[in-house]
Image (cartoon, rainbow, N blue to C red; front, side, top):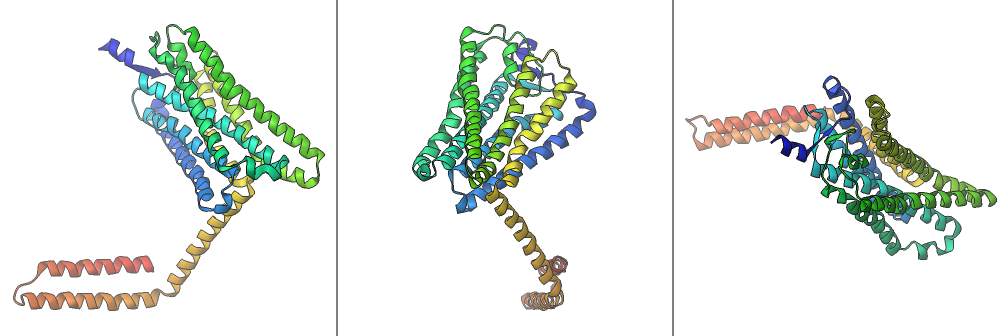
Length: 372
């Protein structure tokens, strides 16, 4: 039974004093996860309901934010379970499932940033051809490739699942590339797939994004003031997201390559920083820095505040009239119920009808409180 357990489950050995700070960890991660889902979905909702945001750039932004929600969903629920569990373990199959979504969504983010860089380049330097180049078909193909290519390459990379594990102690909080160090032997095929994966969906897209934005900034600097302003407004949020993604990649490399040289506390701080601010950074940047999204977000918030203020003011002004109307309504309903009871059987009390009268009285009190 013990051998079967070792072959099935992997111990996550990256937690620090879980017994002491169990509920603090749980509340922190739960709060951040709720914020991530709400903030990202709010921006996506604004893009969906406003037709003036039906442009390729905003479609890519919505895809990027949904990708961040998927990334968080692959990590956060398991963390919440581990914080409340006596043992922090994960099955071998679930570990590969988490690994798959972790790297698919992580690499898809970089490919989406590359698609956005191409969109900005065409918009600024080929404005007359922008409608013909960035058609609906082109956008759909870019989105399809951004998720399908990482999914195929990461799935091939998971051939290591067929290898026997010699170690069952993973130094981390979730399953990343450190899982390959648990295998007894890493095949040459797996190493080759790792290199192809690194070059095709990480290195080359990153170089393309950097080169594209560098060229946009250089060309806009040589152009007029209006072009420089447009380039700064549209490129700055994407550059901030790219910088945030670069920090995420640096963490992943440090955490997996130097796991024996860093302490648990340092690894915990690094992991928490990435997991906390990386998915939450995107909606904050796009919500504040993108002019159209920021405008609709402010309108939504202020309109809701004004509506609530108007409703409460009208309720305050009409409290007395509302109470009078309620008195008339409930008196009429009560009298009708009593008349019905007397007609049904005058000599015998009708307890169901009396119950209805009591319920109506309670409803009256509740509605009066809500309207007061």
